[in-house]
Length: 435
Image (tube, rainbow, N blue to C red; front, side):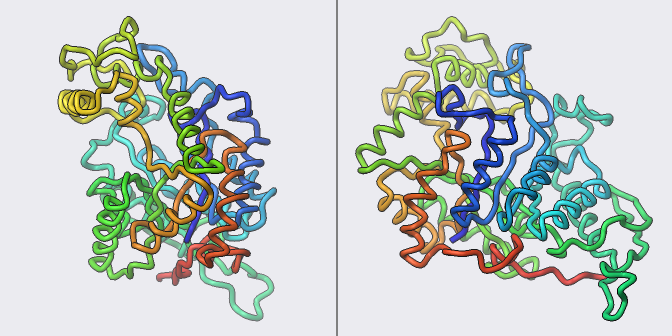
């Protein structure tokens, strides 16, 4: 079983107003959560990306009140205060260039002794693109085309150093060879400035559940970061994604499937359920519920009662109040889904938001959660989990102190790190250089 920790920052899963929650931007918070993950022998620490502050009705969204620091800078700092924990950064292929990003990832891999990971994401968001010189220039259909060539180009660059030869103390890291890449997206040539990373290639992670995302992961990723709600849905996703690997000459073990999940622990199952309900109530305040509904309806709903019914009118699909957030592809269809759910379960607007935004959650006593984790992995619904705590930096303590020891007793999770690199934690092969 593989476990990773996500630093959520201020987000929809976070209760950032809780008195136990500390700074979302001070380095001490990142360091504390990373040290907890390493104490639990987790595979890696995971950071998301924010390239523009999100807005709603022309104002900065309350989830972005503390800003969004840059991931690779943070992970380089964390490399100095951790020893074995993998360090994975989310970095966009739409708004970066392969040469520069390959340098930054290779540098992190060297500085950390082979613990770098790269969560590959794409964007067609013109609002975010306004922060970059080319703006929102990339059509949605082209996102994965560029991403695939981007990753392949980065790998060409990492492979462009000749390995060190015995008896050559003057070239302990080998030597650069000229490279030349010419493709539809990029045409670059020269010599790469950083020696081949200790892992050969930093671990590549793909986030997303879409058909395009699954295909991209099957072709190019080492880990896929997913969301699926039930054991049955997880098994279906697992089987479908692993099946695609054969097309690219890969084995099922070459891609690890790790859904993002939340965990709530109590002394008993009933106590944990009460805590989970309380947390969801904190995560989805009345204001948060109205903001979520506005993203679908495209109308100011601030005068509505969040504990009352859904708006009676249909959304206007041509109006957008939120910027920088994932847009619902069909607001009319999404509103219809919300109405059907609300009517079937007798939910208020806020209750409907809670119901539709809840992640895969494990709620119960430590024994219940350990059993559920084991069942998911043993029955091919996942290879492990990326844990998303609702508090930072102390949100992992219950899992590390009360669930991990039970998994270790079952013999399904490591008691010590066997290797020093992220690839070794994940059981991934060391890439053989090409060329």
